[in-house]
Length: 338
Image (cartoon, rainbow, N blue to C red; front, top):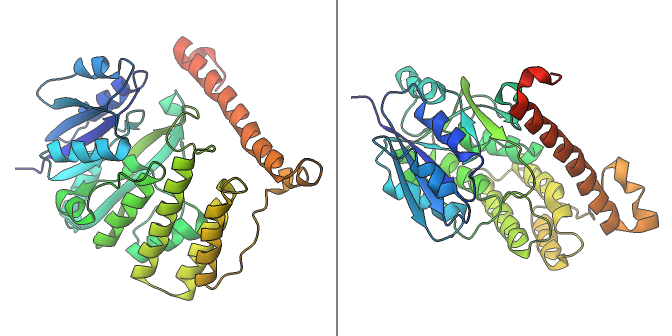
């Protein structure tokens, strides 16, 4: 009998998107599958939308709001699958995504192999998704994957993984302390427990850019900033546990520099912690700098104002693109420019 694949969907206030995510899960061409949805205390109609799909291959449960990590842990505890496919409630899977990855079991992949695939950004129109390969799109050892991720500020989106139950159990549960970057930290532990990453180029998932209300948006949330710092410290520890070398420490130092601006200047206590870690890694701490397009604003208006402008302008542009794409999607793509 072919292995059972569990597609696990944590959901919170996802009434606009979740029907599409469930439909993409149920449409998987892999014959043995189950879908488990955990509604994490939604205050909108998410649960009502999901219940329309309840049946033989889909189970839905609700729980008080505890965060995405807790919802994922609950979904895993309920599932029966031999393999685990995580799926965010606003994202989509290509119909053959799971099947293409499962077929790698016949080509030498083991239960400790982490299977990944291609992923692309989209807003509303899935057919306009942008698949932009990076150096993470390949067959890699655990240490090489983490060095490239941290040393070049890259990531692989949650939906593109396919993980055996054995590897999932070895990695341990999602960390409920983390309200920011819980997926990045979790994947690090999966990688540490794996025998390597196998990239399946045709296995596609679609990552929605829907605005700035998601858990990934930090703003000035102390909870998210403290969570980000904890995740960063764990990342650094994981990489150095695999290999502590000049190259891995350089990747850690670059990783700190990339994220330092999120803490500056309103959480200088956390900046001091990152300064200490930088020194331990043998690096020279430098105050964060903005990109050249915004650095000139620092002298007349101050660093914090310049940083706000750097954050705000791309958001305004992306919000306009989202609104345009939504309008095109609603009225039919043929009536809008490609």
